[in-house]
Amino acid sequence: MTEMMSPAAFEAALRAVGAERYHDKHPFHRLLHTGKLNKGQVQAWALNRYVYQAHIPIKDAALIARCPDPALRRAWRSRLADHDGDENRIGGIARWLKLTDALGFERGYVTSMAGILPASLFAAQSYVRFVATRSLLEAVASSLTEMFSPTIIAERVEGMLAGYDFIDQEALAYFKPRLTEAPQDSAFALAYCIENARTPAEQMAVIDALKFKCGVLWSMLDALHFAYVAPGLVPPGAFVPQG
Image (cartoon, rainbow, N blue to C red; front, side, top):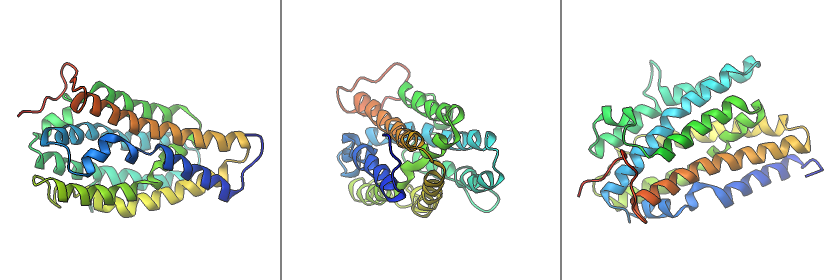
């Protein structure tokens, strides 16, 4: 890319990444959202997704720690409260544990991450490392998958409630606040990237950062599908569904 895109064209290019690469297109998610997984497979998804949820505030803290702009630090701090909670509310991590509770896991087992797939940990750590080491613009841009999450959340909640008799509204408590948090966060990040990507190379770096983040989410589902759907090869030490 040798010429600057207009703000509208730049945003359209970012949205095109999601249309092509966001993990709602993954076969594992199609199975999850249409009630076609068994309980053990749903357990494996919730357990492995926990490691990603647990690394999100670590990623956000890494971004804040290297940010020289007080305004950006202030704006980004809300993400820590969203996931870690504060004196007024429980955060996303605690709400995710309601799901693993409902699925029959002991909390200590979940939070120990002892049973997760190696690929899940690698993907989550890679995301933290990306945010901690790439440019601040790329770090912010990697969060732009939140532009696409409300659609997948609405589909997931509806599909899981309809498809699994072991899931109820309380188990899915994580998702409702994200329907408002994610659009607010993504609107801020998108505006930041449009304003601060001031060369063709910087616009391309933003697009590539979003592609990277889509790859993180996609790779986690690849690992879940390989281990728990087909060919069904669970690596040593990872969670093995019973029954």
